[in-house]
Length: 84
Image (cartoon, rainbow, N blue to C red; front, side, top):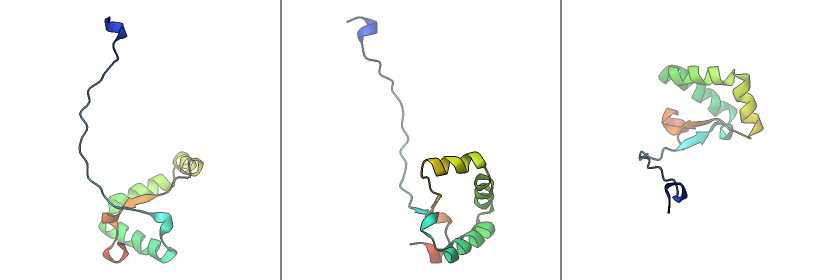
């Protein structure tokens, strides 16, 4: 077997992650979305700012639409009364 006949094997270190429950924003009622938005602006202004920028990006929104995407947010950003 020559060098070119051998399969190419790449070793890669893969980090071990953890599971974090996320919630689809489309599953929330209008009232729950308002509660979440109010909470994000006060408790997590960086996340609120990112969501504002992304929702205004036509290319990003087009991708979401084309691939039947959805907005998903980790549950840790939700106020206690909305955590399910």
